[in-house]
Image (cartoon, rainbow, N blue to C red):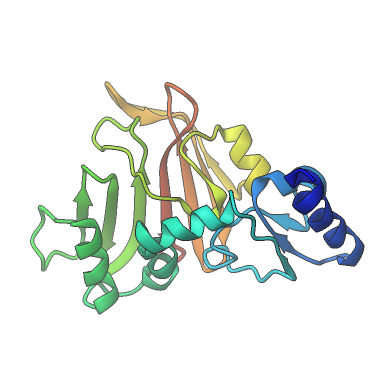
Length: 224
């Protein structure tokens, strides 16, 4: 049998037969066509780590989540291990030091300044320290004029090729929306959608050129 009849269909039918109202299933995007894009189904290859949601059923497929797991192990364990834990904490801990080392971040501001940025333009990552706390961790696509695109896997099932419509299909309606803004030539955005995800806020900024994700920002709720 082909993979559709051998693996996909039996898995989808099992969930449909055993799930109850209020049940949550986490799986890769292709299963959303059988189980629905909203409500009881969530695309999240971190298995709820960053969303803070606990699944009743988890579908792990070879092409989707297994590839993402391998990516986390080799390329970006810092994403699903650090973000939620680091936001709102002080930047003196071992977790932040490891984040700086893994992404080779550096800051132009004095280390004693209460507000400062740690960045690496080549890998497309920045961290903002505000009033002595880690307030934001940001990942940039190649469309941003000041950063090379971040090449690691992104949490929440997102990727930089997604339009606002696709993001809203995945995450639902945002809690707040910021209108488009032009700062200077080449700088600006086509709007920002902000979501409350577990213990943190997630801000998705869209490119004025393609309409796709340009910046993905994870923010401390204390700073929001």
